[in-house]
Length: 72
Image 1 (cartoon, helix red, strand yellow):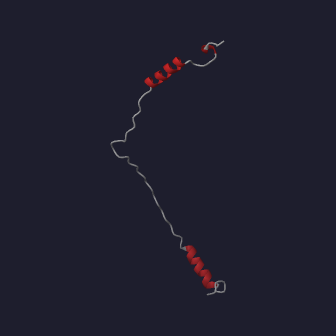
Image 2: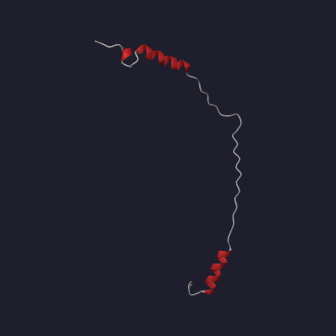
């Protein structure tokens, strides 16, 4: 014998169909559009550059004072 569908935890076809129709009819509409004004991104970037000349002077002094370390 066949058992009642309400007792086995499954939905019957008319109930499933009605649920699907209800979900479709109550769903909203989503619209996505570009803004009328352009998007502006402001970046404040500060770039600082420092050059250390002291190292170059130290190397030149080392080469001049020790010519045997750096033969030509």
